[in-house]
Image 1 (cartoon, rainbow, N blue to C red):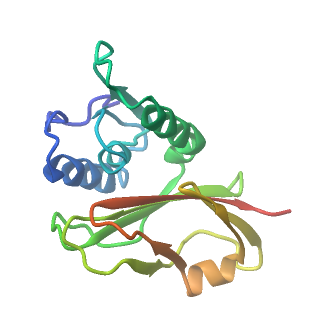
Image 2 (image 1 turned 30 degrees about the horizontal axis):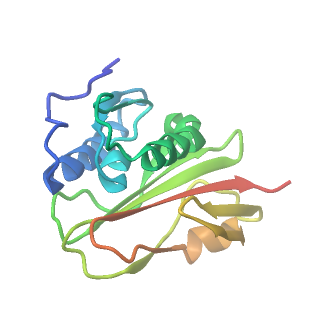
Length: 186
């Protein structure tokens, strides 16, 4: 099992680091469910780009200026989605290294009726919002969808609507990310 899936540098804090990590997740998750990487402590976009089943976050513990709130938020986000990272993987956009696109995927745990969506709006992507059709859901089921960046955004949507109309994702900043969870309601 690849606990360090590549020798691609994670110490490069340029957009190239995030793009490379996203692209590795998109590709390797199709074939190998358990893999890992480390993440530099930088911004949420870059750190989320490194989320993997074996995720480790690195920072300089001697740095007195570290943003502890950001560190806690990143770890909390990862803890909320980590069990989903071993679920069924569905790419929701085409693979690309281009900086003017979105890269989006879904991990689904059908037996548990839950999953997550990660969306990345890259540095030169112009649309601020897009819809992505989810996969693997029960069409007649209802799902509670939560945006981990906006506690007020809690939706109840049918599986049919999520798969046919898609989930609307808004990312107002270029080089931004969104993280959603969903759970099938009984």
